[in-house]
Length: 140
Image 1 (cartoon, helix red, strand yellow):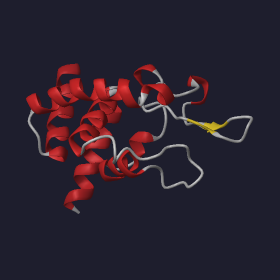
Image 2 (cartoon, rainbow, N blue to C red):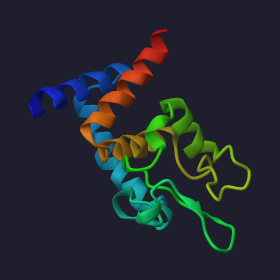
Image 3 (cartoon, rainbow, N blue to C red):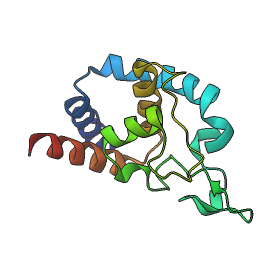
């Protein structure tokens, strides 16, 4: 059954992203490096978030915000590919968020790679749901 789920994930991801399996695997490897260099300091190792006990983020006692988990335990997977890309490139839509954009530091290819890495950390069922939702939205 796990092989069927893995195959479904790959097929849905490829359909949603328009890439090949080799390209996606290379993006994940590159994305892990980009994440380590640019995202790890806020979102933690393996994207567990600034405070794993508060995976959705939240507020610190000083009023600033915690960086949320990106590994499937937070809410990241609820957003479309376009929204995720835009958030990394241009920063959060929330004006009081500490998440600033990386458009001056990362290429579009690097942003796609880091998102592929983050998605690779999500549980299988979330990967399938996200890929399906993105494919469905593109075709309807």
